[in-house]
Length: 421
Image 1 (tube, rainbow, N blue to C red):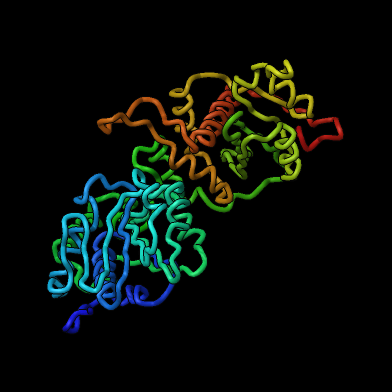
Image 2: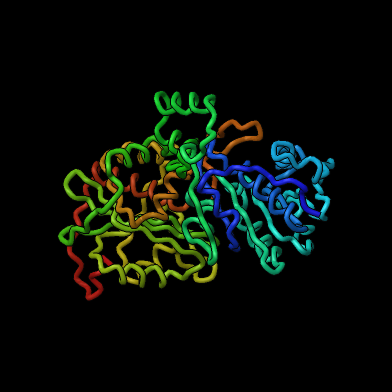
């Protein structure tokens, strides 16, 4: 059965997509936009019109209190549908057979995989959903005409949800950015908070919280201040290659994980970072061929101290093998992570980075200190996907500081492999 009386419900204009068929419906934006309550209303109305099975999920749900159960229950009352929906402790049921189910992804992914007949899956706080969870969830929602609704406040550009639905949208995906100004019922209490944040707080944080922008720099990032200043001063953008100047590269060597390489020119007082490359599980010949394909004239290639470690299989060091391939190698002094970080901070005011180095830039903006179980920061930076690019940049800073105190004369190469330096 359907409700005996017409439901009087209003929605912000941008939420009209919720009533148009589409495999994916994605709402992203900042605080106070009305995304969540709008989705809750739309789902209750649709499930009252015909029997539906609706899965409401998020990455972690340790109890029903962490779900949207309370939000949906409140909207049942607001919409005048208490006669139609039965609010149970862990589910909501409609008198026509509709059912709302609440599950967390991380700890229940196997049970979700076995679910049948889900018509709509609502993923709330989707900025926290991992790539592994998405890979399992999406093919699970496979009933004919089934839909996946996604609501989130963006965090970082590199987050799986942002990459999957905003940076590289899937087919049949309706996307809408919804913010406070799109909500006709934006409350006065939040307006006072918003204005205060705009007038007194960090510009980056305001844009993130209220305008739904991705954070430019992770809170607690090692180079947070330096990267913010680079963006404010316009030192991330188009950086020209100067053919008359040699290019220096600086590497972080990855064996089971990424090898990262920065390409740098010294032009006057400027340190121009013109390129970046990373790959994993590739032979050294791969990187030599990549250098050749760039078309730059190289001076030397700065490697960390572990390039002097002999390979157990060949008995040769990475330095020796690269030199045999024609590269002029220089080992960057080993001065420790903390001293290296300080070297980066000293050179940063003179650094310009080409925006085509986007992967490397993300490494610098994300590279952060480890936290303990109480949320406090450790003195040691975390080792994750960002640390390889950040370490290679640290070797660049240390290497260039050494060169300014001990100048190295670079003679033009005589071999026919001049491109290698």
